Structures are given as structure tokens and as C-alpha cells.
Image (cartoon, rainbow, N blue to C red):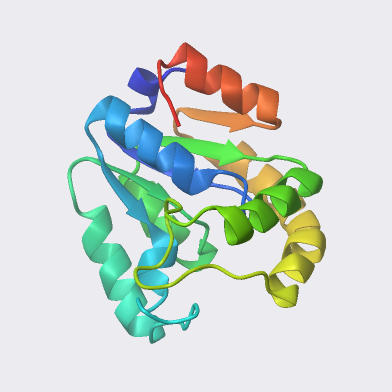
Length: 175
């Protein structure tokens, strides 16, 4: 699957710290799309990941998907149906849990200007996020796999760091 086949409205989903925001920015640069990081819409800037009111987030999400050219990273499955109605392509990142945990720790400790970060906030290691990555993510994998099979858009599933690296290389993208 190439970027051309995925079109101009691309959804990227996957576990926490799987590389969704990094890939969204790379695709945006390669294709001239607007990168939309759902975590930035869901959480208030200049906070330690404080959620917006649900109706405000839904309004921001729905306004964003009306744009003509975007790549959107994030899960927020309750809003996925309207996202998929307008999407032209879908990417599922399905890296191992150990990779997600490593990336989470690395980004909190070493990445000051991480893609998809909240404005005015620096990530810090949180036990509830570690618990989420190591526990809830495993259950979500089954749900994502079923969902992936049901999606009738051009799509690609990248299930390892090697597969992700190959996708970047084949499509001429850089991180």
C-alpha cells in the first residue's frame, strides 16, 4: 500500500506510543496534508493532560474532519464512524507492547519537542499510562484487528518496527 493509494484523508490508529503522531507528521510532509493530532484536540493545552468537555472535543473533531486534506492520528473510537465516513485511507499501527512501553518512557524522559505533544506541557512518566499500555492495550488489539477487517477503505496494517520502517522507506518519508 502506498501513500497515493491512501488518498488525502488518512486515519492512523494504534496503541499508545506506537508512533501515530510521528507517522502523521511524516505523511503530512510527504503529501501536503494537514496533520491533526486528536490528543491535542481532546486535551486542554498548558495542562497535564486535562480533558476538554466531551461536546467541545466532538465539535473540534467534527470540524477537523470536514477539511479537504488531512492525516489524523488517534483512537477515540466513539468518534470513529464519522471519521471513517470521510476518510480515504486507514493505517493501523500494531507494534508490540514492549515497543510502546519503551517509546513512552523515551519520549517522557528525552524528547522535549515531541510530535503530538500538548502545547505548554512536558510529558512525565505516569503509572496509569504504563498500566494502560501494558494492560488495556492488549485487549484493544483484538478490537482493532476486528475493526481493521471491517473497514472498506484502502488500508495498511503495520505490525512491527520493521514493517513501519519499510513503509517509511517505500513511501520516501522521514521521521
